[in-house]
Each structure stands twice: as C-alpha cells, then as structure tokens.
Length: 202
Image (tube, rainbow, N blue to C red):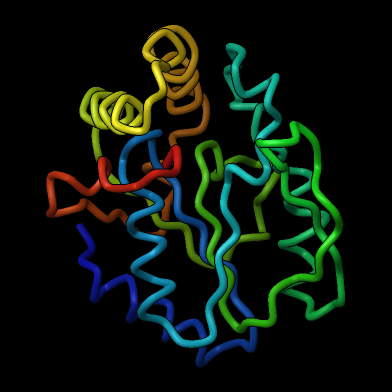
C-alpha cells in the first residue's frame, strides 16, 4: 500500500521523464478521492485539477449502469486529457450544476501535471490517456457510509441513490474492469474522516 510520500515521489519521477503528465485518482464514491487530490494540488508544483463532477452527465449519473456511463469519459479525453498530454491548445467545458448545462468554454489550465479525480475513471475508453493511476483503497461499504454522511452534512438526502444506483454501479464496474488491480498505486487513507471532509462526491 502506498503512502502520501510514495504518491508524490511517483509523480516527481514521471515529471523527470516527460514534460506533461496526467494523474488519475479513482475509487468508490466517498472513498476520499477529492481529499487526496486537494493534498496533491497543495503539495506538487505546477499542478492543476480537473474534477470528475465537471464531467458527469446529470441524467445518466443517476441511472444504473455497469460501466458508470454517467462519466463523460470520451469528452474528458477529447477536450482535456489528449490535448494536455500533447501540449496542444484546447478548450473544455465544465458542467454547471446550478444552471443544469455545460458552461462556457475555457482554456486548459497552464500546468505540468494534471490530476483528474472521478469514479469510473479506469475504463478502457481512457487507456493510454493517464500516466499514473492511483486507486483510493477504501472498501465499498465504508466509502458508501462516508458518502452518505457527507451528503447529509451538506443538507442532501441521497441515501436512495447510494443504495439503488451508485453502490450497485460501483459493484458492477469493479466486477467488469477491476480498477483496483489495474491501478499503478493503491493508497489507503490513514485518517478515518478522509472521505467525510470533502464536499465533492469523491
């Protein structure tokens, strides 16, 4: 199991090999992906973050899917990952959850490291687009409990979605693609509250 120091060292090792790298952080909803990602943003120089929530389809992400197709992976790759790794100028659109539609195009962030955190990230549609894949290794039952607690603290009752949609989606995705095994690193949060402090869905 990797420590925070191991993760940072792995990123720095890749930076010595290439000018731009993409780091993918995935795990079950509520596992602490966003907490780890924010730590990396505060620690690693010349890094920028893309939130998985910015690439969720609001309708599909509330439906059962064995592939987590609520994550717009193809758009993420087309608008962000490929052009960033290739050093091409590009624009992307975040989903605006208040307006319920895609926001205005904006340029890719100026950075050497791009970290993306999302459920359903380690999927064949993104093979070759992520240089370092980190799995936040919290079991589904614990992650779901943390996610429910976090949502309630934010004033949202999403228990039925966790039980009937998101949890089953996670189980199906794990069975089909085994993202824990295919990750380059597995990180287990040492702080029991890691999945609760985040206001994001991760």
